[in-house]
Image 1: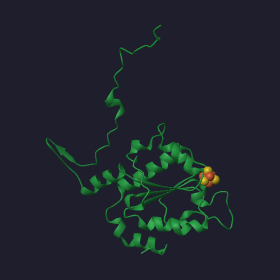
Image 2: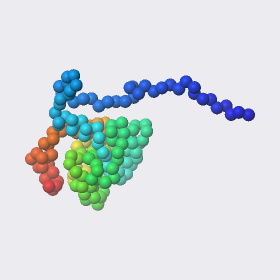
Image 3: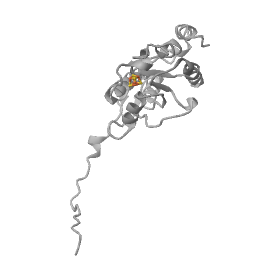
Length: 196
Ligand code: SF4
């Protein structure tokens, strides 16, 4: 007896134009056959939409990050599907979880091995402030050893919050001046962490 297999003979074609988000153009001057803008805007646009995260996950917040990367939340939509596990290929350090003081030098070493421009996101209460672990062995926030650009609150933060933090990093990347990393102000900031 034939199995009751039913074929969809009228598949609904997806409307590709509804599903593809195109990055908005930077400000500039446009005419027939040309578009002129600042190189800074173009580089900012490229950086914003091609961040390569390095997940430094040590405990439970890392599980939320796994959900953020999976199909439902899909961080790839932001051009960040390429996770790197070597600091030399990444420009966004995402620190997720409790950082013990013994782990501090390791985290700093990872940060130092990343090339400029680099951004840092502290995901969750533990990375931001030590969280509930107000003890002798836990670092009370990673900003004691490296500069942090965005803090994501929560214990753990939901994937929506991680995505929101990621979008704040994108705002920083797209608006950052190309001169910022060579400025005295930035060098002074790194100097407070004993980073040359
Ligand atoms: S903030 Fe909460 S969920 Fe995240 S690592 Fe710390 S204890 Fe775990």
